[in-house]
Length: 377
Length: 117
Image (cartoon, rainbow over all chains, first blue to last red):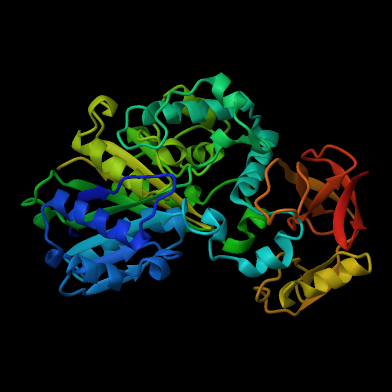
């Protein structure tokens, strides 16, 4: 089987509220990723994106035109949100291994900071939201995840200091990340003074909202050997989807509050021939503090009920760029970029010494995608 | 309101909570699905008026249109005794919500609410 590598990454500046079209941001990020790899747009013959907002907001054909691509043999849009952004690497690998494409570009553009409705205008589940959830006050992502945190608290115990510890540890990483939106160190007093949003969440438990774009480039190892940067290898990937439909997942999931990381994680580990104890850094979709806790446990990295302490104690470096909480809300794309940079040893004062295996986890209910990446072979 | 939930709201208007139940296998489904895996007919059925709080939050910020709700407000997921696994949404009123709390159903302005019982 052909081995697949991530060979280039690129980002725009992240801003709270910008004045550029999201597609223009994506093109800039794509150019940066191609330059990082030492590839020309004409080398790219595949585009893979997440499947919820990108196909309509930033279509592949528009991006291909603006980049000056000459042909596109393979185009695909996968799962939704974080599962789609992270899972794009698995989808791209399928195309590369099958010969359907030689070089695959993936991107994600966010304009939640400037678009009307921001992240509360996701075009999903409208019938459910309008027909039953809004009239009963169940609206806004913080409420959905807050109810998961309350259930978790009932099952395992969860103090406000536990949640604060995750926010503080994540921020500590962001202080060492150029371009992170929140770089001021955070204390527990700061956390406890943060305004309540939906119990038990304060503002500092919640993802940032911003504009910005991210891109990455993949190819086969044979092709990667001649490129500008050391290749980062896809050791294994896994996707999992629970039976509960997306629009009812937050209220009706049979295993609430667990995530489908419990399905994708074991598949990724089996594909890579690795175990949770082999992981050196974890980049986990952290739309809320509880999201990090739940996925670390569901992936088998942290024992059940101990995810918060696992992050706060630094048992394993988690979200070493600052995540969605303190770096930027790029729906998991920057998690992929951070894994690549850590495995290339480029992170300066934020470099995790000896990082050889990175796990990337993307949640986009009812789906989850998990990657295991390793350094240059 | 959309067609998919019309029977639910019609039930609330006359003081009953209706949830689709399969006439073939007896399984309850919420939200209303495209069909039951067994292929049986879905019938809107009274789910009773008692249950347990599965989880909840108290919102201190609203993501709804301005003026839609007064802050802070509680919203709970309640499992009816008659249909374990189904979780109905609504405010818990007259008491602080808690996971595991026993509640009974009432209606305010056509909306279901849950009272400590």
